[in-house]
Figure 1 (spheres, rainbow, N blue to C red):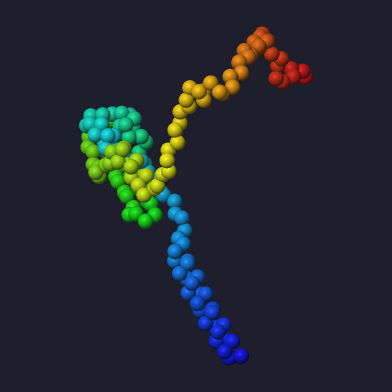
Figure 2: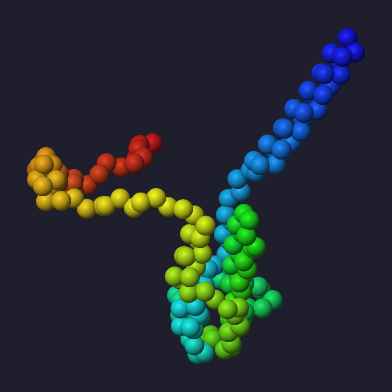
Length: 168
């Protein structure tokens, strides 16, 4: 009986260590978190002192942060968090004098192509299928049905009945 009990305890300990090892291999999936306004190098270089607020908004979009205490300052903040990689954070601040752009303070910004490439890094993609049909394949397709022209609607009445009764 003592031997059977000892064997049972040893079996439980080995199952526990195996389950701990398996649990260490499996990690939960965490989604990529993108927050804020992405500002590319191309957008930042398009900013020139003297632009109006509307022109800056056309180039950069609506600012993420505007303060009622600093009405002449717009902050564009962008963060990107991805599992297994360090977080990225970039800031761009534009300052106005009246309605004209006065000063630009910015972190180094990536180009749009660099940013898109960073989104796809580490992901494996399969073979991209051909998205064109040959002339022979096009000839094998059924002809589309002809569109039937809709009949014209009856003319609208010249006057409508009252919405409420006019009686006593």
